[in-house]
Length: 149
Image 1 (cartoon, one colour):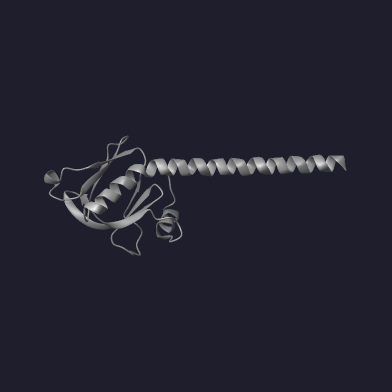
Image 2 (spheres, one colour):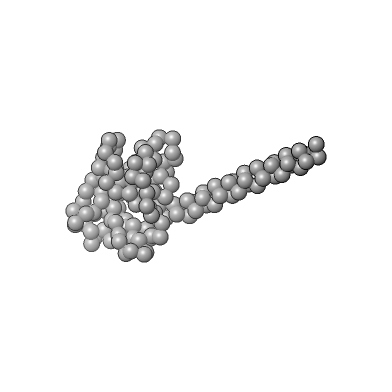
């Protein structure tokens, strides 16, 4: 998916656009844990260096076509870990939440996010179709009343 980076950044920091969840996380990169702050909006996960970071996110994940799974904490050496793994590419991202409650929230929201996003798109398309049909009916009615005059 091609996206305009500036538009996505504005979306990430826009306080009016619905924020589903935001919290501190740890991201595993090159077998090291990197502290970060993540914001979930619609089906996009924005990952910043810190909360209220003036810099754009260093990672944006589109939560589609992926699995969200709990990880083996003994293997990773970190508690409250989960993985976002993409089906098509096999690429994965391992995160660690601050506590069990945050882990539970991240996993549940990330799991349902693609479905909610599709339902929202479906609703938006239905509303657009309804508006177009209504406009078309109004134009037809206007044209028929002008023809009678």
